[in-house]
Image (cartoon, rainbow, N blue to C red; front, top):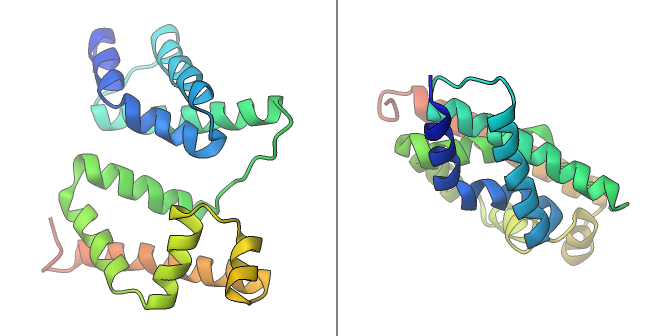
Amino acid sequence: MLSESEMIQKLMQARTRIAGAAWFLTRDYHAAEDCFQNVVLKAMTKEVCFPTEAALLSWAFVVIRRDAMDWLERRGRKVLLLDENVLAILDEHRAARTADPFRSAALQDCIGSLGEEAKHLLQLRYFEGLRCQQIATKMRISLPAVYKRLSRIHQGLADCVRGKMITPEGST
């Protein structure tokens, strides 16, 4: 089990990534920092034990996401929730970058194997931050088509990464 000082050390080392998860939802630096401080406070004041750094960080990302959504709701802002498949892919990618370079490489390979339209759709949604309605307008397709395409891309990426992780050439 991680000691209290180890938990604080691990959380502080991952501060940018953890606070970044809150900023991703709130788009407010100060709110993200407040959410991060709440995570540290909860880790120290609750009777929680973590056997590994990975368990601690997984918990921290769940807690900060909830705190950020609560912050948005308290301010009357609409909470934009990503599809569970997207959250799973993002969590897998985050975990992969910190714990498993093979999974990260698998995700990069899978993204690289996407067609140009799928890559463009991901670029618009996640890197340029466009809403699905804006993407529909920009690409001149219906809103349901955007949702369906994103859903297929997410599921395809998840399946691709899982496949690469269990095949002999992609096994760890």
